[in-house]
Length: 340
Length: 292
Image 1 (cartoon, chains in turn red, green):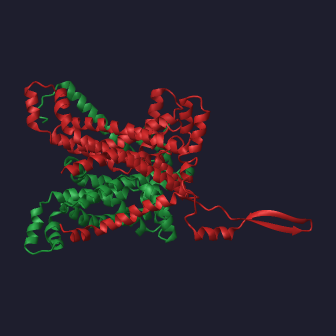
Image 2 (cartoon, chains in turn red, cyan):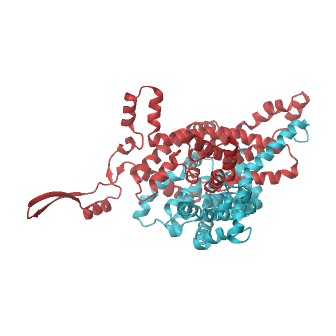
Image 3 (cartoon, one colour):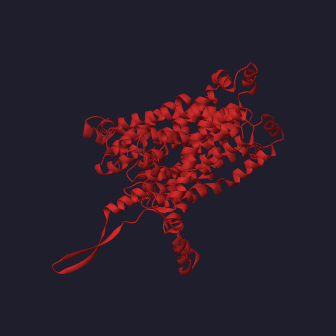
């Protein structure tokens, strides 16, 4: 295709991405280096019968004017990144000096909001992803062994947890594990503790969120693996059988190697999607026990006072995290392209 | 291959029971919530006796029948959920139409160009696809306030179209690669310009790919929470943020059932969609994967 024709064809989509994805990234980076203006304080002298008294007050008009003139705020450089709510360099230095052992040091760090969110996000991403791969593969193998007629309805029911909105899916589960819901009540009977509440303890909340994550994403891995199983070379499988391979050996030596490229694909998609975990924390009302990077940004942006600068700094750090996750994939894609 | 392998009965039993267990875990919550949405709160959350949730003991005492539409009435009429449904319909309709228009043009060009820059455009799109949408929202807010764009439906539509583009581009490019190049090239030999070739030769054969991509952009727009919750004003809210706002108010009023009813209302159209388009959804999920 000629350069000029190509240009006109991709112009609308590139313009959309430039204006609403690339420029906002620039805007986020800029915003993260500005803090909101302080209120303008003036000193007034009020003189009465008992002499003069100096007092300070907030000059509302001047404050508003300043905020309207420079809506970004005042330039503070990297201050927002290093403050307590983000990378907290001072607090970490103090904790390193004062804490007796590594355990205490880590405990101190996990009390800082940014590291708490980071810890949960990483745990969620790296626990859910392998579980999704294993569960998805098992379902695919099982579905592949049932009669053709039953496969359609099975796939339909299996797709539901993934297709439904995450906020709603997690809400439905949340109502069921509620202490008064059916699963919650069942668990209470099983454990023998009538006061057991999944919402009240941090480890149980984490487990609940991870279970939700696996439930939500397993169908995706299942569908991709199932499609892969349909393309397993029959000849290889038959010759393996003639050579006396058991069913387990067939899976191990024929099917699994065939599915490796698909595993890379699912892993990549899952890492990207699990890293942005957000809706279930809103639905499960779990922010007291678990926050993620996305939830941290959402929390800053919502509410009465919108903390734009703080949210922007967290956003930049999150984008950096995504970039680190993606690097191996990008390097590989580039190598493939360069070889061609 | 299923017929080619003889399975031991034990293995078969394990596979069947595992599958049955998975299906219950996957689908039961939806049916349970659907059934429960026609009960009163005391039955939906029935601590005393779980069979109340099935047969509606308290529902019978309070309303006189085993089923009640109170939750739906409260949500749709009292809390004006119909307004949110209308907004969602407008947003989804325009997001799908606009993203498909931009995406087919771009995807076609990317599939027919072998220069370096087309590769880089796809890689940039992949990076954009990986970024959580909420990180962009903090970049939108200040400019949108300044230019008075915040809170309106068209703003949300354009933002969602842009966020959808990377995904749409990747999917459509891979579909267009499967349409043989000879088709449009022979049209150009016959004297068509590139755009005419696209208009008269490619558009008539591209529909299966476009429908599949359209389904996914529909799901993306329909399911979005992060963007719509942040950049739409209260009266322009779509359904998902509206449900989230129910959670704040209904807990205090003791009307969780409004939220349950609206959750079922949002889920129902998706159910129907999956029934009719299951094959396209499955093929779309695997489109990127199977081809590498």
